[in-house]
Amino acid sequence: MPSHLVVGAGPVGSALARLLADRGDRVTVVTRSGRGPEHPAVTRVAADASDATRLADLGRGASTVFNCANPGSYQAWERLWPPLAASILTAAERSGAVLVTAGNLYGYGPVDVPMTPDLPLAATGHKGRLRARMWRDALAAHEAGRVRATEVRASDYVGPTLTASTGLLRRYADAALAGRTAAVFGDADAPRSFSFVDDVARTLAAVAGDERAWGRPWHVPGPAPVTVRAALADLVAAAGDPRPVRVRRFPRAAVTALSPVVPVLRELREVLHQFERPFVLDASATTATFGLTGTPWPEVVAATAPAWAPAGTATARR
Image 1: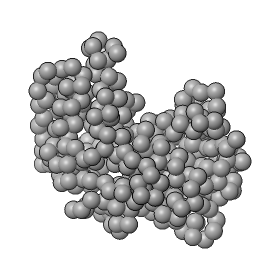
Image 2: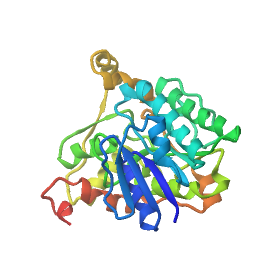
Image 3: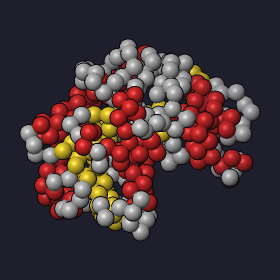
Image 4: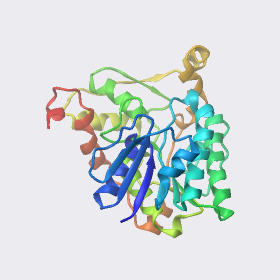
């Protein structure tokens, strides 16, 4: 029976752990708090994943080490990510496991074309450069023969398990579903790719066991791009709310003015380009290689809206 070490129990880590456990694999989920999905085949461990020795011990015998961590707020990335990523890489090396990282699109920086995995990692902000450096470190270890590594890159998450702290669309939707105006960053009418959490988990699981995946990154297949305005309208309609969605743009000038005193806005400034132009992910290589396809948008909405609808509504009670 294959065994896996999953670092992180956010929406993706939890979905992945359940997927692997449901197919009969043994899964150990590591978080600081020891939380994670409840499943007979899932062992939850409270540990500091940046402790390389401890994590390597937990990874002994694992066939795959999945990095699904998300260390705190943007402001903490530069402090927390380097030791955490290095520890996870070390655990994979020592155990002989395949290293599969759940990544994002920050490393590409501003682009004006659909993003493919072979685009240069040309990020201009520190968060994007950090993500790019993590992948280059793993790739260097792979090319040196120390580990087998791959990375799965997703766009903004969508799915029933997201909270306002784990998905920006959820934050917008909370306002729209409550009948309030949603203040959004950037252009609400620019086409945008979203990654359904279950699609991310399926892609992570698929590349882990296929040697064709190792040594390069892959994108998560997902629904067709949709604008933020349309996404909110679909979610509100699926929740049974007949009211029109109201959206206003949070001014870039306000982000600039408030960033000295609001740390999260200061961090957001460097990724505003993602919201001000089309932000489209191309996962055709993943589909061609592994046969994976994304969940259609209407199915994503049908799965998500009941969980996001305010308590007491008909949709939320279903």
